[in-house]
Length: 331
Image (tube, rainbow, N blue to C red; front, side, top):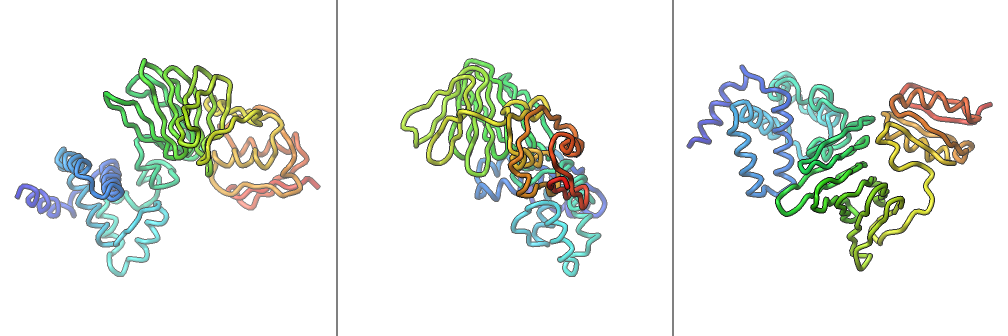
């Protein structure tokens, strides 16, 4: 009965009060997490406690779930797609009414709705995430330092029995503290260290590990036994197993200092790295793809970085817009 009363009160004040953008975002996160978990009872109870914590939480929940029903949203792949869905549904739900349902913030755009330019639902529903070009440092509950590179997302599971970080996408660097193992789960394997410092980069078909301090263990079914990696080593781990990388054309740790440090790196591979830190299209012609470059490049301004390349390589920038750049051979 109490739950029914709360719902009725929230419905009554929907047209007069608007929840904050933060409350709306949290409500959307709860909705997606419940759906992904198959309405797990423990998660449902946590969501219920969140709703009862403040009237604003309950109001945000009612508005998000109401709009979900009205627009029949089966998934929320991003603000742009949500806006397209909203536009297509104007005959069933007036635009002004829909915007009111989310307090005027949820579907206006990524800046107002999420506050960050994140790349997927998995990013903005994670415990910590970074936008394109963003790097972020987080102090973990055990005192360890975690740094997230651009377009990265992680979840934390810290209990009395384990310290676990789940890398959902992107790249992180961990400096471990404490006397218990700190574990990182990626799509390909489980990594573990006690006092190590290492990076993990989850790519499309593998996870790349770089160890700069201490030792890191790789737990992988294909290895048969735990593989311990020493400081100064780099490894590639995929579904089949693990392989040591003898020579890298880029410093795996430099991004934490805001740098790309290359060693005889192909231009095409270099541009693929730079594209991680900027929006839009970036490529090069086959004629210049195999040109090599070595140096130290700052990530704080990718556009300026690109405009410096013609000073050291026989290339020119073809720019249709600031979002579309292609490098070609200089005439």
